Image 1 (cartoon, rainbow, N blue to C red):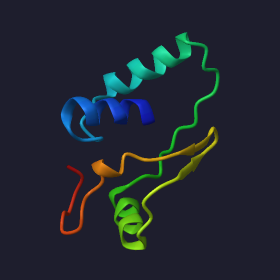
Image 2: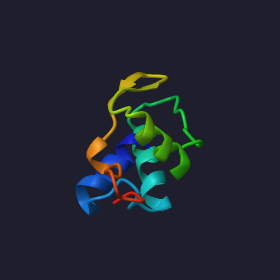
Image 3: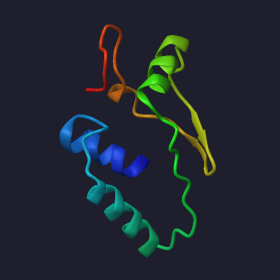
Image 4: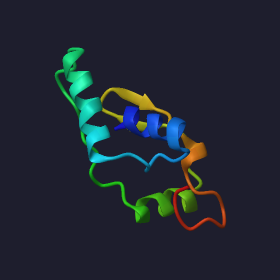
Length: 84
């Protein structure tokens, strides 16, 4: 998920601008590279993003593999109602 979101940010300017095919392409690439375990974070909703903004959290999302700093430039800025 982190890889496909990062690629979407770089290519389209938004972490949400990817397709299901993009997601599965990355999963297949990582599996071919030998990744044998993946954690899927299904609970990230716009409500969660809004709560993270209100709480002022700006870094360090902890995942199974360690700490993964988010692409904070991709999250909505103050006054924006949705992801760019």
